Amino acid sequence: MIPLSPPLASLIEHLWASGIKPILVGGFVRDHFTRNQNPDIDIELYGVTSLETLEALLKPFGRVNLVGKSFGVLKLSYAGYHLDFSPPRTESKRGFGHKGFEVSWHSDIDFAAAARRRDFTINAIGYDPITHTFLDPYGGIGDLERKRLACVDPETFVDDPLRVLRAIQFAARFELEYDEMLLRLCRTMIAQGALNELPKERIFEELRKLLLSLRPSLGLTLLKEMGGLSFFTPLDQLESTPQDYASHPEGDVWTHVLMSVDVMASRRSGDAKRDLILMLAVLLHDIGKPQTTVIENGKLNAPHHAEVGVELARSWLLNVTDDKSLIEAVLPLVRYHGWPRKLYRADADECAILRLSTHVCIDDMIRVAEADFFGRAFLGDTPGTFDAGEWLRNRAQTLGVLFAPPKPLLMGRDLIEAGMTPSEAFTPILNAAFEAQLHRKITTRAEALEWLSEHLS
Image (cartoon, rainbow, N blue to C red; front, side, top):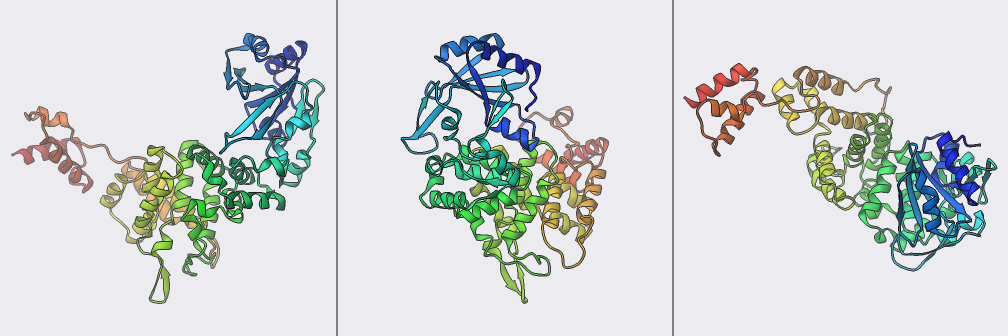
């Protein structure tokens, strides 16, 4: 049985006493078997005569919001849960895209008929909190045990183009193997242009779930098997781009990227937004290699692939998101992902590290470079540490620029105190002072004021 908190059990009993049969469905039930915590609960209510009656029953527990009369979903935040209540419903495809459905809701159909509209068997499990029994008409519990991803109904699965991307993120999140029927359906949907029907915000949401999953490589591999990589070009060019065997014994760039994203997934910080930025940077860090890979002196090399990759990554990201701040956070990590080893090999001085900190968060860059370093095969033993990253992290920490660039020692107010009137002339002076600071000619505020005095004189 699924243990319910006393507040949630009280709400369930209130509905039952009012003649309504509540059935818990969807991710909350699935996550009981995968041992994941899920505060979002979908509850189908059998015996509902009207949404107005249902709303009146729920009002004592908090503010109730109706989401679309056609879907008939009532939302309630209560006791730490986000609850969605709806009568059981059926859907039929009537239009273009993810939302092109005609919805009919019923109070008297059985659970199997209501669950037929769901995408995967693992999402079509119900739980009766009154009798403490599971309802599993499509074998979802067994599929979870077998680590198998299968659709509920091949005829209705193809109606929703979003299910292609849901398949890849579910495979990655729960480490599932897809069945052949599901693969054939998704291949057909992609070939017929299903992904073109989706708005970018829905595409990005599924990518986000994929990249923040346990094994992103599983979902990306499934996407390739479906024939969907061309929709995310130039990722489709990575597999045909070879790499030098001495530094990349694993083979092509696609194989390296798959290994790298899994390394990054295993080393996430726990901050979802930051982790998404890091995962996107690792996914795209070698996106410039297909355009730059050449043979030099008998060896494969990709000179300037990071610089070329910046604009390719920008275009790729703009195709899936309008979040400009996220894009601008990812691009420097693509541009500078090779710099930890570059600076380490050159035994770079403090000035180089200080200047680098003005272009990229050094700690994040080291994390991306570390995933790049360990996301490959090695001809000998796998190194225990990423020496270049450890060296740079220690140096940046000592300089106080591991997470942000140094704060300017000379400020505009200092120029005013020196007798200057605020004007455009401030900018070149402050820039010159900061440049001197990066070159370690100024290391204290007193030295900054002395520099200003000399500069003005």
